Image (cartoon, rainbow, N blue to C red; front, side, top):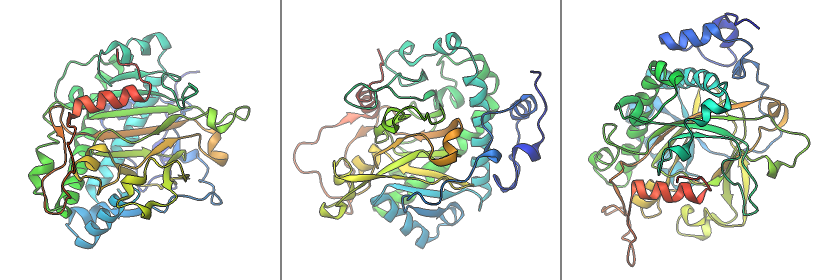
Amino acid sequence: MLAQKVSRSALFSCRAFAKPPKFTPSARRLLATVSDPEFAPENYPPFPEEIPTAPIEKISLRKLLNRDQKEADRLFEASKTYGFFYLNCRDSEEGEELEHGAINSARLAEEFFKLGKEEKDRYAMKNNKNTIFGYKEAGGSKTDSKGTKDTAEFMNIAKDSIVNNATWPLPKKIKEDNDVLSPFVTTAHSIGLDILKMIGTQLQLPPSAMESRHRITDSSGDQVRMTRSPPLSSTAAMEAQIATPSHTDFGSITILFNWLGGLQIWEPENPDGNKFWSASRHDDKGKWNYVKPIPGHAICNLGDGMTKFSNGILNSGKHRVVPAPGAQGDYVRYSIVYFVRPTDETPLKVLDSPAIPKFEGEEEVLLAKEHIANRARGLGINLN
């Protein structure tokens, strides 16, 4: 079929978005050449109302940027419990730019995943020795001790290859459309760092404590991840269709956009039985709760770095991705994520503050790059 031009009103209906996204030249090209897109939020049915969801907080980015203390307090409480929160992107210009960047990046992701297997495999993670960057095919990692394979394919694109001219191998499609990814990365990194500094202030840390450990100009494991997951199969059990296995994130803060359900976070059965929620995150007793996607909101969560820096005060919540529930399960699921991680040479150790309990015993200290590599191998991702 010949590519057909699709109008903005058709692709970005009022139900899906508050206003049409901003278009870079590459984004305009992607929009003009799309035919029968898989990524089509205006066509998605609503998340099923009857399904219980995680009661995570809705945080206003506008209020955070205006240094609203009550909102900062709510952010801190959310960071200590579930470690997840919604971020309203439609109440500030910075948030709208972030959301529009994610939409444009999802359109680019669809173009990339349409490439043939041989072409995508040229950029496989296993070819980028000892890194987490590159392409992972569906089935490239394991979801349980039985060796069940995951169902999602994704492409990890190093922040340093987008904004710092690092020489990671990238497909021509992505290189040519760097004007889609670059504004998204710079905006996401800036917002993520602002949030980290606000959380750090609650821990009586100076802004430099987070700034020095998350400089966008320094080499790090920061990345954009584009993910494509297949629709729900009616012939296989849910546990055999896990797109992303249970894990906590490697870095400091994650900013996620997804337009269909499927993300689940772990709620320990007795989180208050421990000093901090983070001490209960790996308990076997508990339940998985869906996180309902809300238009105009990113889903943010803290990673292992912040749990380590705070000696457990902050929670890097355990989560996974399964097929979307209900009628949403009939659609291919796309997600766009930006991971803000400590710079490669940052030691992951408890920070010195009167608000952070001292580490008891001998502390094992890894560099951020070592921790990331260890965790990736633990998920069954081959880095060699």
